[in-house]
Amino acid sequence: MFKLPLKQSNVGRNLNIVLWLIQVLLALAFFAAGGAKVAGVEQMVALFDQIGVGQWFRYVTGSIELFGGAALLVPRLVPYASIVLALTMVGAFVTHLFVIGGNPLPAAFLATLAGFVAYGRIDRS
Image (cartoon, rainbow, N blue to C red; front, side, top):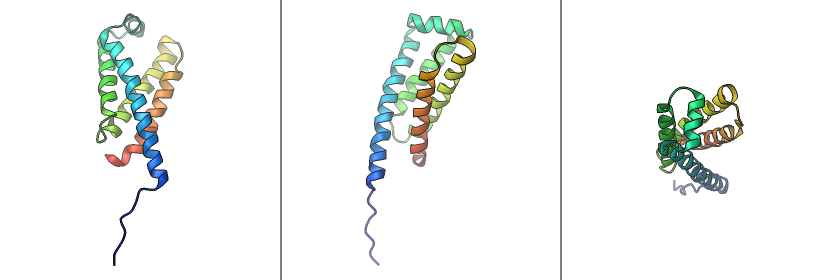
């Protein structure tokens, strides 16, 4: 018996578009944040001094954000990158709450978006 090839539904196509938009926005956000950390922007140096674990941690965090942001644009790597970035933002959220103070909502928002992307792209792994 002859079967027609399955077409992607409108809902699936729309979700794919939304996920790509979020991925690009997240990539831009993590490029900016990671770049500032790696470049040694004065605010980032002071922030990581306040955290108290050393400037090496700024480089590690910045590198994770830069590589994770780039990986969000590579379809095969998206599920892994989004999980790593979501966990990184959970760490930032906890750090804001219990160590340095300040507003933890940006970290929570980025963690939520990265988690949404991970959930939406997990079938690619």
